[in-house]
Amino acid sequence: MSTGRGPGRLARPAAAVAGGLAALAALAPVAAAGAVAAAPGSGLPAAGPAAGSAVPAVGNALPGATPGAAAGGAGAAAGAGGGAAAGGGAGTQQAEFPPMAQTLSDVRQNGCRKPAARAADRPSWSQVFLRPDAVWPLSRGAGVTVAVIGSGVDAGAGSGAGALAGRLTLGPRLHGDGDAGRDCVGHGTVLATLVAGRRPADGGPSGVAPAAKVLAVAATDDAGSTNADLLARGIRAAADGGARIGLVAAPIAEPAPALADAVGYATAKGMLLVAPVGPDSQTVNAPVYPAGYPGVLAVAAIGSDGAPAGAGSSDAGGGSAGSAAAAGQAGGAAAAPGPGRTSRVDVTAPGEGLLAAGPGGGTFTATGPSYAAALVAGTAALVLGRSPSLTVEQLADRLRSTAYRPGTALPDPAVGWGAVDPVTAVGAPAAAGPAAAAAAGSTPAAAEPVVVPPPPDGRPVRLASAVTGVSLGGAVLLGLAAAAAKVGRNRAAARDGRDRRDGAGTPAAE
Image 1 (cartoon, rainbow, N blue to C red):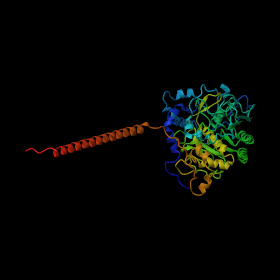
Image 2: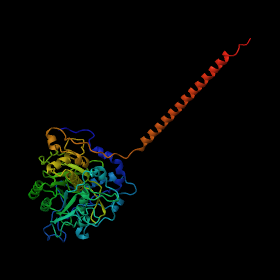
Image 3: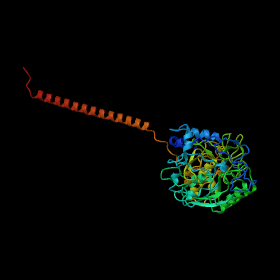
Image 4: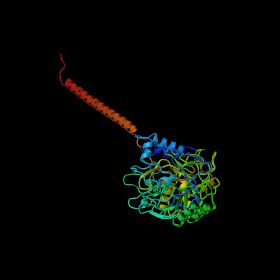
C-alpha cells in the first residue's frame, strides 16, 4: 500500500477556506464542557413506559469513555472561532445561537427544548469547506430519501416556510405515543436540516442536498435515550419506508444480535447506513454501534483546520469509529488501530461549531460526530441524485475513494480515507474503490477536487500595477528622449547643409 505521504489533499481545502472562515467562525460558539449532558440512567418521561422499563441512555457510561471530554472539542471550536471572532466572545455567541445537544437530561423538569431566539443570516463554515452548491447544477438530491433515525423531526420544519417544506415524511415513533413529528430534544431536526434544509433567501445555513426528502423515524425517548432494540426497529422501518440512506443519530455502547441483523436487512434492501463514531458528549476509545458493524459508513468529525476534532474521538489522536474487526466491510479495508484505539474511521466531515435550523426555525450550533455524519449522508444523497443505480457498496466506495486525502497511510486511524468531498464524489466516474486499490497495493485513484480559493490579496496586484506604471512611464520618457534626439540631429544636419551651400555660392575674400 502506498503511504500517501506529502502535503495531502485534506490540508488544501482547509488552507483554502482559512480566509473565509474568519468571519464565519465568529458564529461558532465554544461548547462548554458538560453542556451536552447524558440522559439519566433511570426513569423516562411521562409519555414513556412505566417505571422500571427505562431505556439505556445514549452515550451513558460507554466503555473507555471520558465524561465531559467534549471540552477538547470545545477548545478547538474556540480556536476556530472564539479567539478570532470580532465583537463578542463565546458567551455572546452561545446566547445568540444556543448549542444543540444529543440528549436532554432535564426534560422532566423543564420540558422540551425551546426554539432558538433568532436565525442566522450567514452560512455555516462547513458550506465553505464542502462547497456542495458547486454541484447543485448536477444534483440537489432530488428523488432520494434520507431517513433520520433518532429523536424525530419537528413537523413544523416540513410545512409552510420550514426548512424541509414539502419534503418531510413522518414515520413511526417506536417509543411512546404519536408519530415522529414530535422532536422534544431537537437533535433529529438539526440533523435533518443539515442533510436537506432548503437554502434560505437571506443566505443562512442550508443543507447539503436541499432537494432530498427526509423520512423521520423516532427511535429514542423524549430525552434522546435509546437502546439496541429501538435502533434495530428504527433501521428496519427506514429501509421498509424506501430510504436509500439511513442516518443513525445516536450510537450505543454494546453490539446486539438484533441490531446486527437490522444492519444486514437494510443493506440487502439497498439502504446505506451512515453512523457517528461516538456520542457527541464523550470521548471514547472503544467501538460503538452501529458504526462498528461491517457495511456501515463510520464518520468522525473534523474542525475548520481539517484536524480531528470534537467528541467521539480518541485521546490517541482524533476520531474514533466502528470496529477494527470490520476489515471485511463492504467496499473498504479497516484502518489499523493506533495507540489506545480499538476502532476504525471511514470518512470525516465538518463537525464543530456548525450552524443549522432546529425546532421552531431558529438557528442552533452543533458540535459532534453525529452532525458530521449528517453532512456525509447529505453528500451521499447528492451522489445518488445523479447516479441512482449505485449499489450500497458502490456508494460507500465512491465516498471513500473521492475523499480529501489526509497525506498519511490510508486508511488513516484517525480520519480514515479523509474528508468527504461532494464536488468530486458527484462528478467522479465509477471506479475501483478502496478495497480494490488496497489489494493492488496503491491508493485509490480519484479526480482532483475543486478547491475553494482564498480571498484575493490586493497587495501583489497593487505592487504589479505600480511596477507596470513605472515601467510604462520609463518607456514613454525614453521614447520622448529618443524622438527629441532625432529631431535635434535632423535640425543640425539641415543647418550644416545650408552652411555648405552658402559657402559654395559666395566668393572667397581677397
